[in-house]
Length: 165
Image (cartoon, rainbow, N blue to C red; front, side):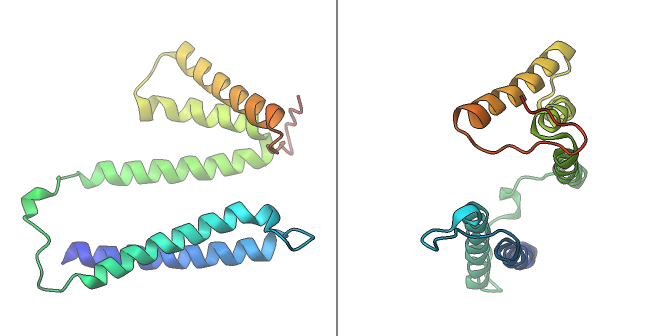
């Protein structure tokens, strides 16, 4: 019963986030001038619609379960410690917020290298400084070279630090 209630709450929250996301995309990102395709808003709008569809699936599946129906033996579900879950969620949200803030002021290359440097130790359990430095610089420069230079994808420059290679 608790799982059903948490599924309903989670899917409702995700559905609201999806609706707000889609509204924000349509309100702020311009479409294509010719009207034949979505333009720059196509990918973010698609992600919002995908989130909305998946949250609707979770919501409908949770309503299909009857109240008295048992989903299985309580011993079937793994016992995760709440502290570990809260820490992992908090760390992920913190890293994403920090990445967004850094991206605006330092640009793609520096923000990516910084976030990878901060996250690789706790997430992967690698604590060797040379390996961490190589991973962060190699990943950010590799993505920049492949996507920014080879494929021509726009990667943001920073307001404070502008590394326009």
